[in-house]
Length: 248
Image (cartoon, rainbow, N blue to C red; front, side, top):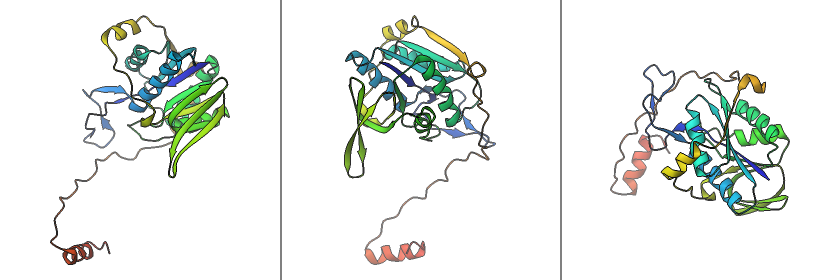
């Protein structure tokens, strides 16, 4: 069974994001970039399944400019066997990403498609669901545990009432939640070895997918600073303050 894992290059989660002065976009100049944390979890799970003998090959896919190769090399260093880079300098919306991933999944004949549940830059949480719909395949979102038994995949996910376990026939699209695993630390020797692993390149035009934006961003703006809180002496003062704020 072949696993296809989608990875995205985003601003590192430790970086405080700033908006450009003209509000046209997020300022990523001289900002540390890294693999989307949820995608890192998806890669780790695919590699663990391979180590357990459940998956025969792990293929990492990324869409973006030249620097997306760095993200793919990280996935290769974690244990992915091959990488596929779809080159484009344009911003790609979730539906276009899903269409591109579908093309690669069909070419690779992948049976298990793993994605992070969302990217921390746009927080859209749409790509996995759109990919499953385009492929007419079952989907398991927010996976906290994945078990592969022959041609069946068991996915345990957290719900309001606790947990539920769902069974799926292959192929299946699974999106990873934080509870799924803790990604391994990538050591320097692994990064050096990753440079020798194959990295295949495709263009959007070659895959025949229209990535024209369907949405127009009017403006980016930072959230307004929150006012400092106050302490009240008793319930009566609390009620008075709430009335002043027209909260009650």
